[in-house]
Length: 188
Image (cartoon, rainbow, N blue to C red; front, side):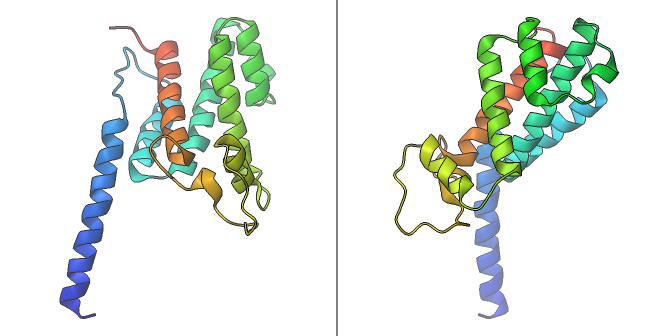
């Protein structure tokens, strides 16, 4: 391969990457918040959009879980008048249960947060073969006889727009944006 061929190859590859980013950018629904978000949540919301556009789906799920946990903790402190120290050693699961019991989130939102939390935990606390197993279970695909322990599996492989980590990242991103909008935005 000479320099001219390399330039042509790189230009074609860069165009394909750009088209993918534009496609993902179009999938994001724009939300305009009616008031300023708390700084940390604003930073996370902005970064998670960029991560999705760039195709960093693992990071999107991890950051969405962080945004939800920050938002719920903030709501518990402001709405339920909890002391910040009471929320310091409480994880996403406990914050979700408490927020649901206090009527801060609905049963449907609690279920969505539980699924987000399970996805986050599977990514963070993964063991060899677990990501592949999770994908087979979630997408009802029979296990293959020749699966490797460290294969990416269905979950991490963006098979289509609606399956795998790409589909979940978009779903969780939309849910996270809707939840933060409900907590901090003003309906038009």
